[in-house]
Amino acid sequence: NHYTISTKLSDSNDYCFDSSTGKYGTCIFSGEWVDTGLGFQVMKYEARNVDGKANSTPEGLPWHGITQSEAIMACSEIGAHLITNTEWTLMARNMEMVPENWSGNAVGVGDLARGYSANITYGGDPFSNTGYAPYTGPGYEYNTGGTLVGPSGMHLYRRTHFLSNGQVIWDFSGNANEWNNNNCLKGEGEGYWYDYTALIQPWTNVNLLDYEREQAGPIGDYDEMHKGIGKYFGCDEDGNGLVRGGGYWNNGHAGIFCLDYASLPTNNHGSLGFRCVR
Image (cartoon, rainbow, N blue to C red; front, top):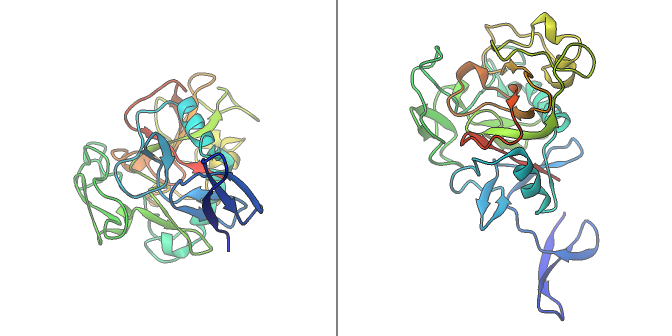
């Protein structure tokens, strides 16, 4: 198993021995990480700000109100990188194929869990969240009411998703909108992202079949009866930064495949958070 041992060398600084490399390096204690089985590790939880460093912990609220470049830097400072669209989509498609993530306990049957994301105003939810989940971790797996969490509830509002290797990821859909390390070019065809910022679209939209769905959408064909997938909100300006997963109030737009290319990379809205990969 991979382990680290903290020690002090002659210069009195803290260093860690990393069993995966056989070398000493700067100690980076960055919380709980998950081996995805897809060639990389990811933060189990949305990043928190712990003494100015990104940390994967259930304690406190997500690190939010951060720009894309600030999120990139925060991950770099702990020896990691901001999650990319490729990594996000690999994880989402893996989750899509896990029966336990569907309310019908079979792939494509019922709803995918979309987590802490409820809003009456957008329709379909019995309550609305007005802020981030107040607690995270065991005992708080479900969005149970407006800005409330608890140990049980409706599958649609479950905050955890399983990977095929049995590992659990928190808030991959809902809670904070999460920056990815990608930017868009507006247009049609290969390499371009369709401008659908006027109206959120399902991944079955014909204009998304030439490039967007291949790059970021689900494997299966899911119509409006399949809730929790997440929807597409396209690129209206070249250079916009990628945000995925949806936020605490995003209702049916939220989901593990939610894609939002409507934010300038300098946007530091309070709903924007992130997670790192290594």
